[in-house]
Image (cartoon, rainbow, N blue to C red):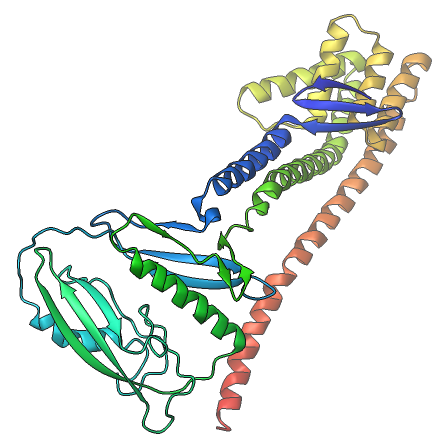
Length: 422
């Protein structure tokens, strides 16, 4: 295998095959690989792998933790819980708490109608947004209502409900405390086996969190029913898309480049065909005025050059004629210059045109005007066919909006007719 570099591309050669890879594509693939490795390195340094959760420092508020737990079920399950901020033990100023006590019942019901009919999770807030007071909850039946508000109605009285007493201990910034008691009636809501397992793990986490309120953090439970628990962040396994992002971007850039190159080539061929009849016509006129082929060629090329200098549109056929003019000025053989002109234009009419000029150079100008007359007739016919084909393509592109408009009209007509039946 050999490789080289040419115009922004690395060229790899395998015996009789050749493969090119652009530097932009390599750069995109490298970015994707670097992002993937960076996220994996951060993941490997995460203390969560050891089952340890960091809590927010003093006064920074609580954090919401979303985890994927492996070991509860055969597949990973998702759990979420709140971790309160680290608390100070310092004297704080007293403020009024009666208003908060009156609002708490409305704040904690969540999606339940009231505390007299509790079936879904309660919103046991740990901080009041209006006053900044911290709230600590306790329950006389942790199996019914956990400290995070999760409700377990399994085995509850389906007619009268099972009573659970909740106590909210409100504390201000100066150490003043006030307790409020609420009576909640829990009604049963069937839980699947998976939900029950998740509930058990959540309760264990809440107990660990409660015991460590004055510490920097706490360890998550290490096992569940004799099986080890493995923790990971929710998006821990979704970073592989970063690895594929670079090659995908490189592929799209290459596809876009090929598409644009194909479009430019097609547009150039279209312009060459449109200019062909005009080039033949001008050359025939100048030959009829007594000029030689070379003099007429130079006249057409220089006229186009002045037009371009004045801000005229670039036209590929005349650009190739101008390049041929410079070749003739530099001493190139006239026959070879015409042959290269036809080869650069690629299209069959130009190859035939270059062949006529080369044949005329060898045999003389006796029949050249008649041959150019026939070629000009064919060229104008080709131009008409090209214009007709472009019109058909434009008409085809207009079919989509026409069908859309037809659909709108059908809706306007049909919908009122159907509405009259109702």
